[in-house]
Image (cartoon, rainbow, N blue to C red; front, side, top):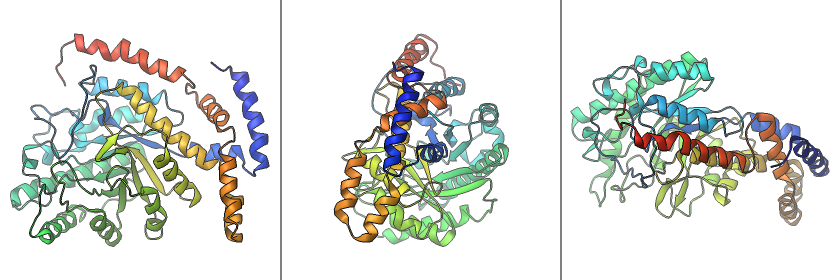
Length: 428
């Protein structure tokens, strides 16, 4: 384990090396401080939620692994989240789904009110962790047909419209309570396993449903609305009405924020490539950071080409502050608290690496048409001591570094999570 004096010594040496490239480390770290990752609550309990009597997961969502110790109620989930947050440098957010109401018992999802999330809002205020919110349009009897906002059954469709209306009201109340915006994201599982004869009708129904949902206006200071597309889902391999093309057009016309999930596109597509193009037309974007493996979309993110490309696209196009970042994955087969920390730290390290590029010199070479010099400088910058900068960032943030955070995550699981399997399994 490196001592504090060694970390500071290495950082000072790194400052001198980066200065030779024209990189101001203090400015880079200040920019990194402004990156607030919205951590996904549903990793902590394998997307179970707190609704009594809810059946198995549906809507193309599948959590693999039977590792013991998942959170069974709001108290356990909040404790796990706090443990994960303590391992992540910086100040971040929490992303909730509507199925996690913890105060009182709403009769159904179309009856949700802000009071049902009072426990979360009190916790948010006490801990200083802002909340984001999502309507939950899956794992419900009225989603069994595979269609929600595009259902041919008007009663079913109206139920889900009302649920989304109520979810936006909850999100606006959260934003007002925390003195800033709450991002409300909408994703639906609608689609078809096999070929369809009248896709236009489903898209037309989705537009009508969205028009009704977003007819209620809320202040942008407390509520930001995003819509999340997907190429396909389990059980909807052939057609989804909520495609990237559909939501891009709808968001542009209606002043919404497109949400790009890194696991929701074809494996050869790059979300990073879409960012500069969309920013020409949209002032803000939301990216759900996930890791697609072949046709599965929700593995725990780790450092690699996809994450590096995403972060470079944000920084190279001066888009930090315009692109909101949220985690979206679920893995029931590994240390759940550790998975949160692993994903967030990988994302933040990738953002730091992007911020440490000598952007001005690289842009100058590009403007001169010297592609060789530009690529060579990128290659040389990768050999710079970014690890020393990351260690210093963790130190100044009060977050553990090196192997210490791994040990803490493992000890928390052994001390807290695994004890749950010996207790009553009742959820709140």
